[in-house]
Amino acid sequence: MELRVVDHPLVAQKLSLLRCKDTPSTTFRQLVDELMTLLAYEGTREVRTEPWPLETPVAPTIGTRLSKPKPLVVPILRAGLGMLEGFMRLIPTAEVGFVGMARNEETLQPVTYAERLPHDLTGRQCYVLDPMLATGGSLGGTVKFIVDRGADHITCICLLAAPEGIANFRKLVDDLDVPTTLVVAAVDERLNEVGYIVPGLGDAGDRLYGLAE
Image (spheres, rainbow, N blue to C red):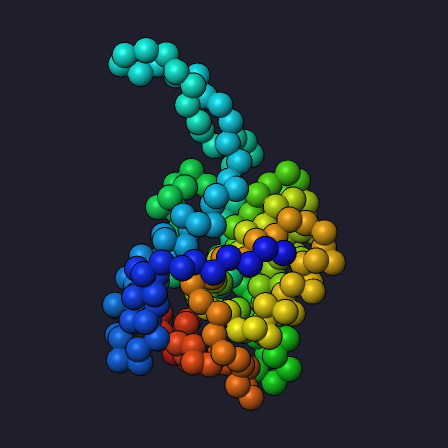
């Protein structure tokens, strides 16, 4: 697995605003959208392309276009939805699937409660979106899910990651033997006793959409 921490002043500035407990939900959603576009720019460096013969107003030339099959973007519900539009701004022709993967707060293990994905992902590049890589369970479970359906190249994009989550995620994806890249805005200090990232930014889903209790 390749880890990429995006070192850019605008990424750091927007992430700092996300961390602030006084940032309201409306501003938080806008910042996630903006930050996601910056992270997606880095995350799509290996997107597959092909030569494209075309005519400019002046002369013929060879351009570049995305090759087929189209990339598949997979936000992990619910918090990953807040990252989707920022990604799609760069690749509006990508297809979108969904996985609902929640963390059991007692065992800290992932539980799948919903999925909407093609049954056959053979030859597909997939981009998995999840704001927080804490224990690594939800992200790792989703990656295994789509690899089992044939995906052969995975890029995961997260806002924040904990060292423990990165280590757990690395163990899982290295066993899958599929090229995997993890793109993050920052790697934080640690997990606390209840599995939250420190200093983190709190519960991303709640800050995006409210408690929904």
